[in-house]
Structure formats: structure tokens, C-alpha cells
Image 1 (cartoon, rainbow, N blue to C red):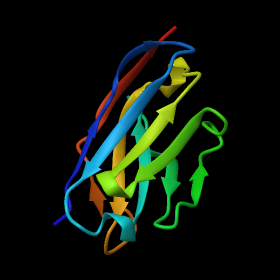
Image 2 (tube, helix red, strand yellow):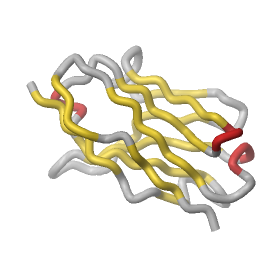
Image 3 (cartoon, rainbow, N blue to C red):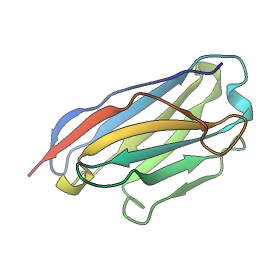
Length: 116
């Protein structure tokens, strides 16, 4: 069973940067797609970015040009580099993996707070 553990969240001023990491257990990391989602207070969980097993990535319109998703299969890790952060990026960020189905495995989340 794959487990996902996020880290890298914190408090940052608007315009700043953070890099989130998500480490996966297991030996099949290179074979499945991964995504980042976020949930702001009082809002539904929303898609942020995804990267396929082949490295192809896609982004929500709200983060295009500011966020970059990448993966290091040797380290079983997926990253989310977040630049030019805005207060509206404040949320709990979740890593998810598509193991046997679409985003069927989730991490516990990491809080990102952007102050104005």
C-alpha cells in the first residue's frame, strides 16, 4: 500500500516562494500519475497541478506561470514549486496519486499561508 507524506508548507509573505514535497512509499513510484490539490477554508478541494508517469504536466489556470510540478523517480518524490504567491493561494495542499484509479491515494496535507 502506497503512503504519501507532504512537507514544505509554512507562512510566507505575498510574492514569496515555497516548495512542497511529497514522498511516496513503495517501489512503483515511476508508474503512476501524481497531483497536487488544495482546499481553502470554506471551499471545496480544488485541482492545482498534475504530472503523469511520463512527465507530462498540467495546471489549473489560477497557478499557470507561477507553480511548477516535477517528480524525481529516484527519490519517490513529487514537488510543487510555488512562486509569486498570493494571499488567495492560502490553503491546505494535498498530494494525491493515481495507483489503481484516479487519485485514489492521498496524503495528510500541509498548510500554506500567504500573508498580504
